[in-house]
Length: 291
Ligand code: R5P
Image 1 (tube, helix red, strand yellow):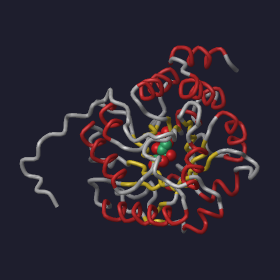
Image 2 (cartoon, protein in one colour):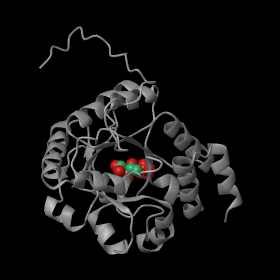
Image 3 (cartoon, rainbow, N blue to C red):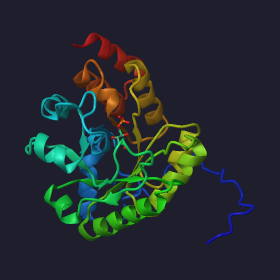
């Protein structure tokens, strides 16, 4: 292991230089993967825009019933037409997502804490690969806590999921968690996203931050950005526009869609930004004008 004392600061990110090993496949870092992996990744990232709108409704895995998600069975059918991927737990997906829905599935596969715990960073890999395959999931979402108490178990979970995923051609999405004591700095997100990609994650879910272009440039797999706490719709659309402009390949948005007064319209507005090149202003006008 390299000596960390006196390390030079990384700075040569070449943000204007496109990823050099793209080949003829549209998903960053996936050119050398096999057909099954590429098929799953194509179910997530649209081959035309290269981007994805994930709808995250996995909050119940540690929060239980969450404002806006009280009735998944009622909410999900309204949103499914406007999103590419449904990110949830196996319990929520099996019970509330119609099996004839032709959308990608990002299956939350770690768990182990609840909002009653102070430290959420200790999780286990809770879904075995057979059930991931049974559900035809397009990726396994693994929560990871870099720099937190639970870092070792997080990275163990991620590595085990990558090992199983490589065996059966199921991609892994590393989800960067930010512990209560941690700072949302570009430095932290560069560290966390790159560690997860180096350990074999095929997609990284993380947050917007300063120097976000550098986070994207230094990460050899696609980044999707979490929405985070509920913002006014205008600001949430500005966030989506900003990160897509800076190289994110999509958003994985939860509360900013399901806690909106008009969840289905908000999902459409996000979709316009992510897939159709709409500006935040255009998408917000659509949101305001549409019932
Ligand atoms: C975080 O652990 C979960 O993956 C959430 O689903 C995620 O943070 C996305 O939801 P939101 O946009 O509400 O933050």
